[in-house]
Length: 218
Length: 296
Image (cartoon, each protein chain N blue to C red):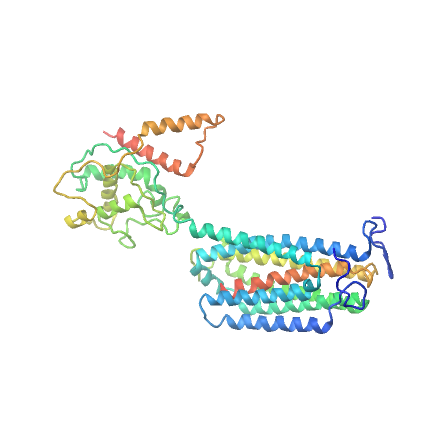
């Protein structure tokens, strides 16, 4: 590790291979953008699959999307957008050196993540109970239409991958909170907070497209 | 990396997002979410998609530009992030193009080889005889059962994978071209466009007439062809059969020799190289041709 990342409050030493702390931060941030591009392409593959199959079977997808609850989708959209906002406030707090304010905002963000997952749990359990499941597992009698199970294969895959990102994001924010608490992350060195924030905003970004595509436009 | 950008903050190198700006962005996102939701109750047809996705893009721009600060960030990061969407656009466009211009290559297995036309054994194969129906049953058990089922109920082993489902021959309902032998003969020759029913024009004509009479005999009642029905498919019932309606192009013996040569030319593999799908279908027809020749 060397002196990289060895931080005591007030005196942060950047890695020896960087000119200064600013360049180190910029380099780390650029790395995060590159990583987010790979995320765009991973999620993008699922979106392309959805677009193609929706174009092929418009009637089935239209009927299938009516089985989703748009109000719960809307609620979760509000929850994620609010959590993005509290994340932003958490980042600006640590940049100003307000440690306890930062911790409160990060805690709130994780809390919103939990609310999102709880809503998602109710949606999933309702569907599993009714037999509205992907592919061959689909047993819902009320809508026995060809290609409807395909819609739910995509629905569960896309929202599942997204929910996995939410869980991962919550874990990362918790890790960052611990580092803030220990004083490893501070006004002088806040890269982890800002970049974990990027990850969290990306999760929000994906949902911004998932919500209208799955719940509203079907 | 630019060293000297964004000194608009009192905190050294880093731009700190003012709380007021963050709140405005947050409020805008909430309003746009409500708009998206409300729009879903207004039916604008395909415009719903355009507007819905446009609003989503505006929201995404706010998240990336303000919350992730890309607008104040180094331009190289904008280029990097935008490149992700450029590749995504290529992905969408190429895949959609394939879907749009694929045509019916997968739904209509047009045979690439035409069978050899043997002289017709029957003078008037459009007239059902017990012999033709019995022969039709044999051909049916070879060519048709995998989809249409042994009893012609449309429930063969491959039926589950097909959409629309194979026709149930024991019922009166749902026939695209009709249930008369001449109409079944037409279906066998041309296939059903947009369905899984392929053209069986490569089967010898006698076999197709035999099949037509057999399939007609499975139905709830046997329908008979009138002169007008036969005229529709170009048959003059007063004259004898000319033998075949399919022009021969590749001799079966030559094709078989060619296939064996190609298979042998590979690294000792038994697999026939190239368009395996068409060749597989060709193989089916080859069997049928051989089969019909062996028949007394």
